[in-house]
Amino acid sequence: MVPIRPAPPGIPTLHHAVALASVVSVDPATDSAVFRIRCGWQVHPKRKLTTRLWNVNLRRVSLSLDAHAATLTTWFRLAEARGWSGTMSLDRNGGNVLFDGPTTDVCHGVFP
Image 1 (cartoon, helix red, strand yellow):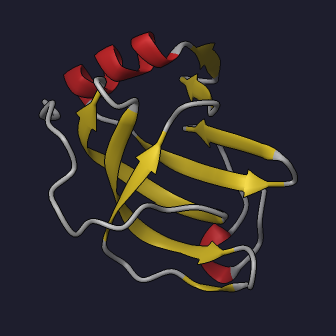
Image 2 (cartoon, rainbow, N blue to C red):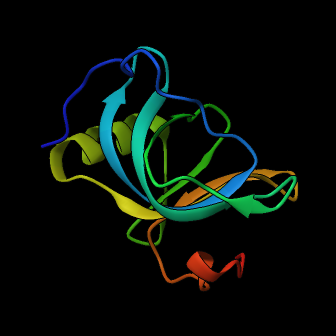
């Protein structure tokens, strides 16, 4: 189970990035979650992300679970119950997406 709790102080908020990530905690009160980034890239300017915990605001993010679109409420409920890992693409080409399906080689800078 993934805990429901606010992001601890000092966790930076991730923007403009493409990364492989796993959810660590969720906070439905603020529509955000903390993710452990395995690998990824800042998009503007392009540079490798630090492997660490990052806070992500999930408002206006398209969410996918098992290759199906999910509402934020459903995503929180299922992420809390069984966890989530996959690809996040934030503020890239005008969209924000979290999906758990197949992806490109994000770790080597190939963006979906």
